[in-house]
Length: 150
Image 1 (cartoon, helix red, strand yellow):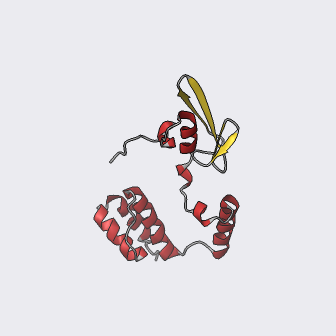
Image 2 (cartoon, one colour):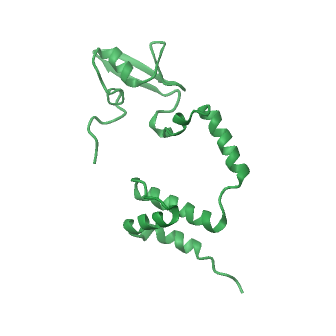
Image 3 (cartoon, helix red, strand yellow):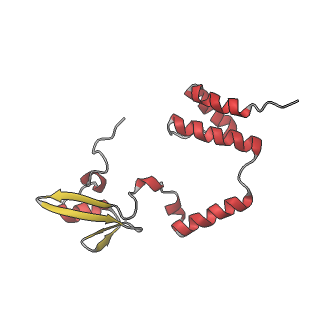
């Protein structure tokens, strides 16, 4: 006699479960309040957690390897490791902005940005150097809308 695995059906049901019920499942499975992220995030994390509890999580050697790889990327800097990787453009990306008829070129570096051969920690500092006034660098280089969308 074969045993029916209820987990695939439970995972598939997440897609049609109302959001308040997903949040309740989060509370039960993680013993914490759900984060304020979108529904797809909740679904994917709940799916992982359900499988983790039933089938087991990552092996200790896998966790150690991931931690080592992470330290190679951020040098063990805990502040850096909490920064979302997608907040900054990929290293090597060139940002171009014309200002008063002059093309300004910024290159994204591992540690920040480079403009006119000089390193900068932020795009705002570069925008201020270019314009002489305070700017949100992300807005100045067209990476972010100046108005937040709801």
